[in-house]
Amino acid sequence: MRSDPVAAALAETRSTLTKSDDGRSAVARPYRPRVLHSNPAGKNHPWWYANACARIGRILEGAKPTFGAFSRDYALESACQTAGHPKLARRYIELWSYFQTRDRPPPPKGQDHNPFRWLTDRAAYARWYAEIERICDASVGKFGDWRFGTATEIEVRR
Image (cartoon, rainbow, N blue to C red; front, side):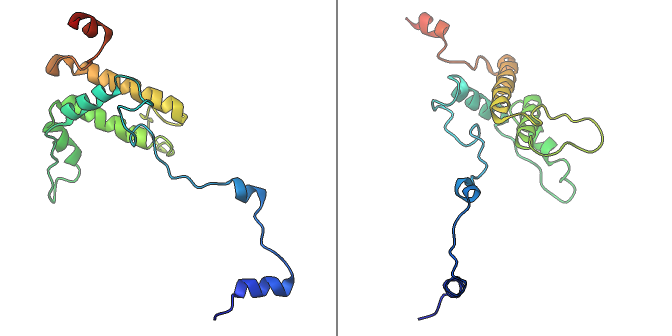
């Protein structure tokens, strides 16, 4: 049986290993934004978020980037051009990238366009919901109404 060098060193110096108070309270948690990694129909989301997810899927439907030697810079543009609603697809992809990089430092030169920069998680999620709602509202002209189950529709069905 092999000897334990740590136990031997502790016995030799007559010391013990203990955790500090800071070590006990520190817990490593992976970064998981709840907005993107949870059930949109769950209780943590507003009632309309499941419909908004379906509408964003309809806006991005058919988006396929062009890959090749000279298309790396334009992969985002080509994907947005083939989407169901190109302008709103571009707007959503930019919004998503801004949301994902909200904790990164701003660019050293030029204007910072990120609306989520340095917001708390709660404020960023609230702004995310508002922006998604605006994108879905802008798609009404092409795809029709995206809100289902509102009070007026329930009253009309009765």
